[in-house]
Length: 114
Image (cartoon, rainbow, N blue to C red; front, top):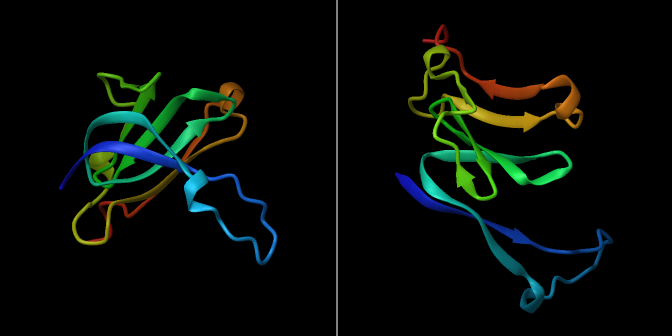
């Protein structure tokens, strides 16, 4: 399964019980276009709407800058995990202080869990 585009729907909603979302005001914006194998998560670099990471179940994490996927993976942990069935990379998150500490958090089933 290959996804050719990652689309983000941005909805400005007040988080108060009983608020009805006006579907006419939902904005769809193409932020990254590329070919991914089982993308499951994405996150923006805090404070920088031009840099986004896209995480694939197989353990490859891509970086897009200004909507362009970089040629080399941001991180490749595919040799450390099993991605069959419901296993593999299950999530990724960039630390809010990433520019200073360079922390990226990943959740995955490692290759010892056979």
